[in-house]
Image 1: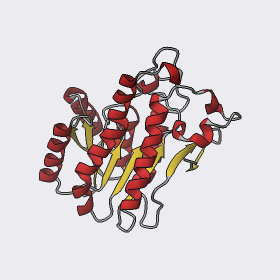
Image 2: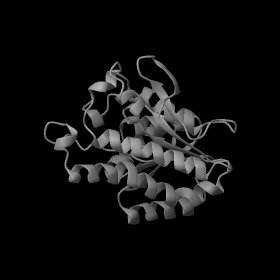
Image 3: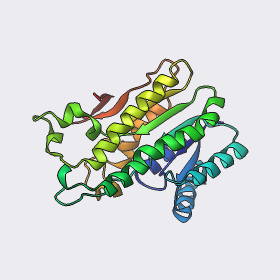
Image 4: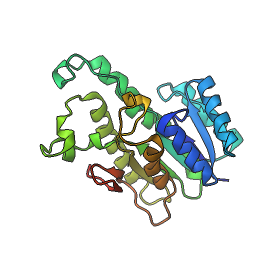
Amino acid sequence: MTTALITGANKGIGYETARQLAARGMTVLVGARDADLGRAAVEKLKTEGADAHFIQIDVSDEESIAQAVARIDAEFGSLDVLINNAAITGGLDGNGKPSSTTLAAMREVFETNVFGVVAVTNAMLPLLRRAEAARIVNVSSEVSALTYIMDPDHALWQLTGITYPASKSALNMVTGMYAKELWDTPIKVNAANPGYCATDLNGNSGFRTAEQGAEPSVHLATLPADGPTGQLWGYLWGEDEYGQLAW
């Protein structure tokens, strides 16, 4: 039995990731803060034949994380895949430019998108180490990459808000450092770029579907032994294909 925990999996890209992994024969642990929404997602997955289980977890609450670890340990004994998918945008302060950004907004977004990933990963690592060859996938974004953000000829040049992009840039560094720590182990750690998908995160304004957005995470979660580690991989803006992105 191969088990995969996906945080923020009750809807959007997280739900589609769980659905696709279940279709590949994995036992999927649907992580969500809201118990009603999480259980509803599990029931929906089960109608498609998925071996799905609800795991209540708030990535910004260490006690909640500890309880999730205890349950996974008791019921499954190990964890093969961790997908840190839960994230928030935090909205825009003032005119959306860096000079009008509040520290409160920055702290709120980093609490979930960065600190939450570190807290969950550290807590789950003992379970991941028990697996034969675990995979850790951190869901990032192309807006994290300074290579694109600072290119006047790139579509992302127009972005000026700093809360969400900065949190994803930090997440990339977190991903790289975990990959280095686990370099000589069977565990691979990568960041996934779903692309600009229509989800609640952006008011459903994206041009890709949540199903498409899940594909990079699923790919990285099912890497073979000779697959890469320490990469940002996924949708390549404007190219309609997948590959390694610049940091």
